[in-house]
Length: 84
Image (tube, rainbow, N blue to C red; front, side, top):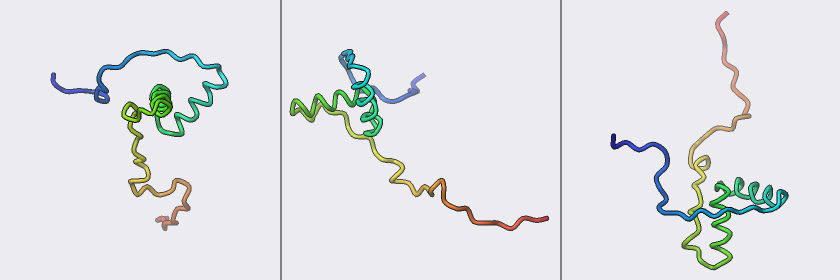
């Protein structure tokens, strides 16, 4: 009963709705994806930076792919002999 599924709580949050024009929203979403943040986290980051309040910016996600020795997906594979 004491198990927890999903990510841990970020604490109390205020719900604010933003409705940018479609073209601008697409730019914001693209930039959020590139930064590895959700749309809401990205907007909070922009606001925190604009207001000079970095303590409210969400932490940047770790680049886990850079931390692990993952071979290139398109790297040529070595030929292996097969039994006939």
